[in-house]
Image 1 (cartoon, rainbow, N blue to C red):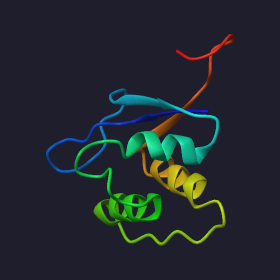
Image 2 (cartoon, helix red, strand yellow):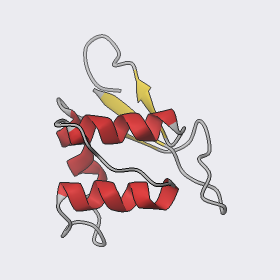
Image 3 (cartoon, helix red, strand yellow):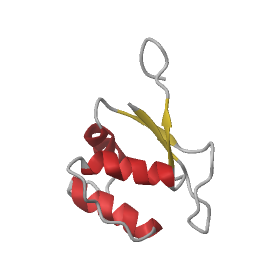
Image 4 (cartoon, helix red, strand yellow):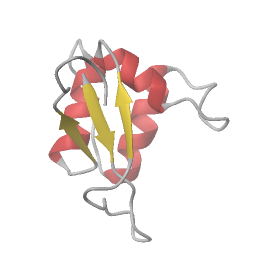
Length: 91
């Protein structure tokens, strides 16, 4: 699974066709990769996801697979795009 997390402009709106790619076998792998920076590494996965969602709107993760729900919310609101994996592996 590959997702591209888009950069945002000065108003916090996503900028299409920008951002970093994250790869993982599962949505949880991708979320773990997304939260690896000095300011977020100490957060649990749930805390990280909720802190991101709080910045873009009022969302509460309810599904058993919260990580996939989180990525789907980001994609639905144009903050991320699911990408096709090329044949033979990662980009």
